[in-house]
Structures are given as structure tokens and as C-alpha cells.
Amino acid sequence: MSGRYLLDTNIIIALFADEAVIKNNLAQADEVFISSIAIGELCYGATKSGRPQENLARVDELVANSTVLVCDAETAH
Image (cartoon, rainbow, N blue to C red; front, side, top):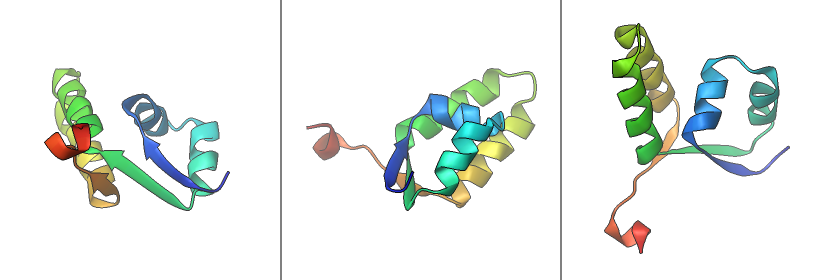
């Protein structure tokens, strides 16, 4: 499953849950991107979780190793 993929929050959560299908598909991707909106959703969920520090660290690690696409007014139009 090669190609370029923009991950949404649900796919990232599945990746964090070590779902094999997701991990296998992403391992074959040419490029993977994450939107700044998905990062915000993940951070919000992490702060509301039972393990906020651990979950925020996972988000931070993902961000450090990913290409993040920002969403501004130009993108929205």
C-alpha cells in the first residue's frame, strides 16, 4: 500500500493501540503526514485521559518524527 497518506485522529489512535493492520499499511507508505488539527485533538484527549503525561509524550514523539501540515485560512479556503 504505497502512496502518500494524511492520517486522521482515529488512525493515529489505532497506531498508538498497536493495531497490526494500520502499522503494516503505514510501513509501506511512501510519505505520511499529520495535520495540526489532529495533533490538537490528540493533545486534548491526552490531557483528559488517565495518563496525561504518558499520552502527551506519545503525541510529542509522533510529532517529532512526522511531517506536520498546518491549517490556516488559506488552506481552509
